[in-house]
Image 1: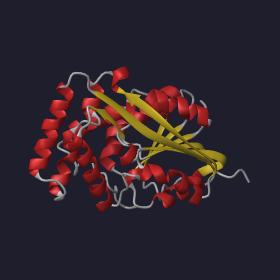
Image 2: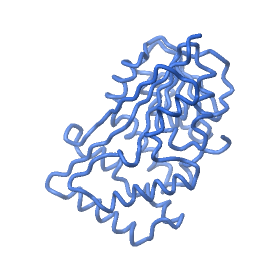
Image 3: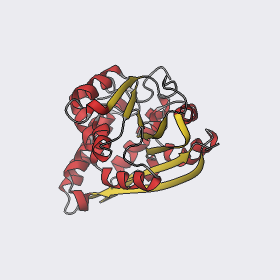
Image 4: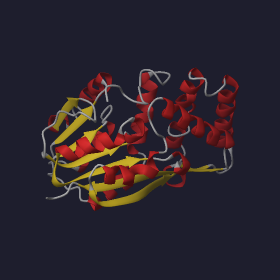
Length: 275
């Protein structure tokens, strides 16, 4: 893959600064459950770990904290994101991080080198997910594992009171992602992707977080962020009137008596054959 697929921070959002704020919230909103599941899948401190599609370093920071004795290699195609990560992680474990600017389908990393690869919210954006998983299998040691964390538009979350405008926007977002080579319904295909790429001992779990536990503030940043849908207007998939209605629906939702948001992400795991 020679492009950033269906995601480009400098093209699809109001300002990079605002998007970085959303990404930082996204990196922590379900992390406690993700970390618990990663350890259950077999991630251990001291392992050599690769994070693909690592972005601005917010999730890398979480990995550095979780794995204080591990070597971590990040693979990120966007030079803007690589620079952001290098700056952000300078005093947050960055001395243990090897930054690689490369495509997830052509990492340039050596064969049979790493114990564990983590792919968080990246597979939904790439046009060739099986090719990406195959490349990851190449760089893993025999018996090494790949864990993919991603979402699916039809399982994205629960909103109470129900929000028809937001449901419409998610569907249009899926259309935009498909037009740019991504798949916002990738969650249902994760098992098949791992299987087709030659992984074995597959597993699939769900992790959730909700506003009754964390409060509404982080959910107001992600996923209730209307700026995510501005690009749909530019692409002709949403009218200015629909965007204005969505913005008003967001305000009405947040002002309701007891608003509730539950996010659902999927975590798929596969092992490279030991032989």
